Length: 158
Image 1 (cartoon, rainbow, N blue to C red):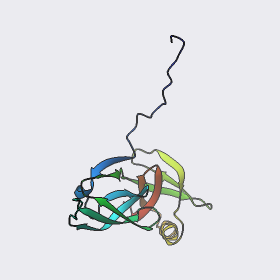
Image 2 (image 1 turned 90 degrees about the vertical axis):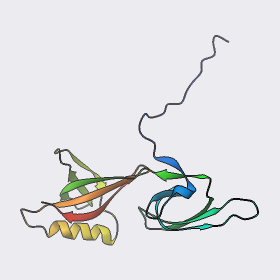
Image 3 (image 1 turned 180 degrees about the vertical axis):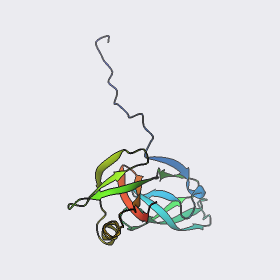
Image 4 (image 1 turned 30 degrees about the horizontal axis):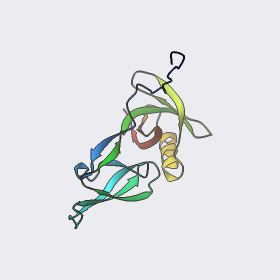
């Protein structure tokens, strides 16, 4: 028995990707995980209790990264996972030909690991950046959730 060694899996000390919340406490325009995808709640309705005693909450959400629509039904007393969604604002310094964006935060740190989104959103960001005057800058919001990041909402800086 003394020769047996127990092994433990390592876990990161960082914040979790999501947290539980009672279904009835969720609100429209909030966030929820539906089928493992972080979604913004666009429609929510509650059906009354049936003969088995649980009111059901019908949720319709739009994936915050792909725009795809997801639906779920959950008893109002049960918990659903809510993703931790973080928004960070940075200044665009450069966009290379492959679509990778060089970003700088307020303290002067840069990062170059994010790519422009596909389609119209990426074209919009690129055209706004290319049409800036010399003394202007372009701010961009980085949306992060479930270890995924995406550039959204370009707006003129100071």
